[in-house]
Length: 490
Image (tube, rainbow, N blue to C red; front, side, top):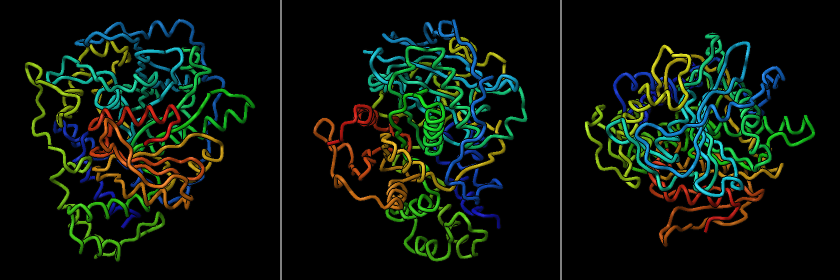
């Protein structure tokens, strides 16, 4: 059996319960191959934990951006309520000769846009679109059930920052390459390098943000993207002996950090939440080899994982207490919507909305007329070439460099659960600076937090699934405000 293939079988089935699978049947099938796609690839077992920057920025890929900002201005999205902030959308070329371009959507802050920081958001996958972050999680709008109109998210993160959403790598969402072989060269290193080139060019297009405090955020497999991009920024700042990008911190949620402990934590979470039997937990720990160098698994291990699969297939593992979506249809008229009650069919509405020609025109998206629909997690990328088994060395690098590091976890996510994150942080063997304690919002416990020496902060968000801002938008906004302001949760 190939290394970790038993885990791939499990993860494929997990996707059936994921919020991205709560869409039409076509999207469900395509989504199966995305989260942790790297687990099937040749380099999975290779220890690349000390991420190395490759594809260093070529000056030929830094282009003049004069006048492009105004061309990217979005006057108003179809069905959009009134807004008091500016928004932009468009493409930034990251490799001119290959014709590789990444799509972005940018919303300036509701207030104090000239002083609030710049925050980049990345969804993971690998291969899923960050427009999910914009329209399902932390952006200023959500999509009504009619797939035509939008409603306001009063807990949008652009109350705390100027927020930039990036679809990466090329092949994800509206991002593309004119050289189709590029899609077979996708991987962590290429993604980090292209994301860096994107930022350098984007800051030329929006020069008022060049010296602004900059933070990187994301969730799930962005637990790789975020630290690797931060590492690339620090590398080039040091190489140039000047601040090219004013990186101040990174924050990752329900994030893939360390494969071995992430997987152990997932099994233990299912067992402790009465989803799988104690016997199966025992069998998995006894017979399964979680190490990244494992080449085979025993029959007993495979049998126990089979039992695990049978017990999780009918729940939304990304929020173990959430209702499922049983209809892929949009409604003729919008249903009553509430930001505080996440609709499990929201992904359907977003899919329909973003594939409307008038919406794409307003977003300045799909300008090359792609041969496929916009999809949350499509199938354009079939190869993922590199994925380190751990990003812990990068977190340690940031802490030693004085970069703010926060990790948060929705506590009812079963995919990268709180146990996984705790086990992974424990691998770092950091002394505790501020002991475990609750933090509050509106006199209610918002979650729990602990601060480690080196100023790594870990925080849980109570009653939140994998996509924390979707399920607990108020608590998520409070969390990001504390992070950006450098204030401890209390």
